[in-house]
Image (tube, rainbow, N blue to C red; front, top):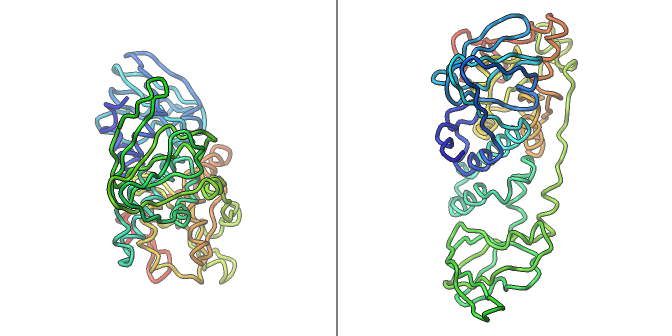
Length: 388
């Protein structure tokens, strides 16, 4: 699967996800080959799995009889990812599908974009220039991928600096660990003692950006090596007691779709001045937004949200949505902490699509027209899907 990592950068909405994050995600993927003329019928596309056409050409048959021809050389979107019912896929040529568990992909995408959110904030704060390098190391560390995306910002508040000198033993083999360490400055030596031969051997030297002792955060286990500083330096320590709360997921303020119907159908239908202060924001990536989105929704990708904060009004009420809610929940929670009135649309865009199957009238809530913010108001843009 490692050979597929380069191609993965092109798929929507995976563009821009750091290499380390994509490698972690690819470990959860599987390949499926469909020979020319063979068919696959499933209702799992977009609900249980996200499927990309990695090579070849297929024809998709939808329940209403609509046919869609998809070629791997020109299509970067997931196959039938907005489908809400059974579809049939027939291989026009020998084809390879790349299959991701839907929750794994969406959680990893959200985590990566929240990490980018932090990078953008750090880049805009000149007082943190010296911290940028080691913070980037931490954001790229797979140690934290199990931490809920909404808690990414809290990671740094749990790290405490520790000034160390050459010769200091930081962790000792055989001890029960209660913390892990990131090397911010300096180098260290890793030694392993073999009780059978009674010989201690150096197995590695580690430098800035490396982490050690992370097993202690999730397991009650003895240290399997001794780590000694070979240079003066600075470590960032994360205690187990501080790490475990990071694993607890916070819930974001939610709003039901019916609450937004006047806003989505048209601002002119808003029932009061209070309704007109609501702003609907699609936090998916631009290519996702361009396929289709809710009417009167502007597009600000989650990872770029910090760049737009100066344009947001603390007196307005922002309702964020994504495909199912992972990214919009993160956006609502982090903006709420920053003092904005922010909520997440329960069920996300997928919920609207599912309602369209039951009642075609719901199709009126979906648009391919772009919208952008001007003077705090949502304005339709006839020519571009880009926020101006």
